[in-house]
Image (cartoon, rainbow, N blue to C red; front, side, top):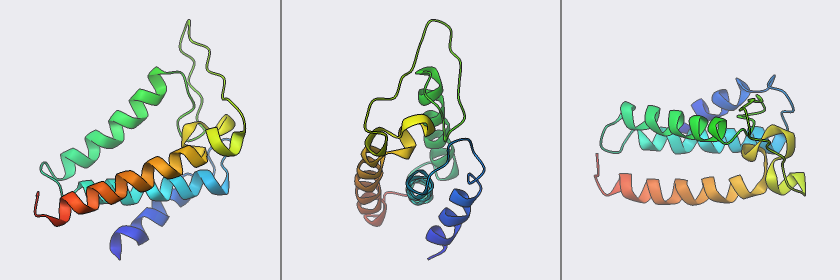
Length: 119
């Protein structure tokens, strides 16, 4: 589908980000699918933009890397837990299996909601 194709392009646009990993890029593709589906919810493009901005802002405010891009927040010291394959390591939470599970659940819930004519 178009959402999947654009999501792959969305992930590829992050390939040069610091500490990018195949799992991280896969999760960014999943995020693209989630954001594509949110377009079909009430609010359309604004819902999708808000979800993307909200995620990036939350990670930045917590001093975590956002898709590998580090943030320096005074008085906060982010340290990824281990193992990196679970937590995302230096790429940030988007690079770990925990994000894969959360994004998959978000896609399922959003797809069901959107298919019920919520938009």
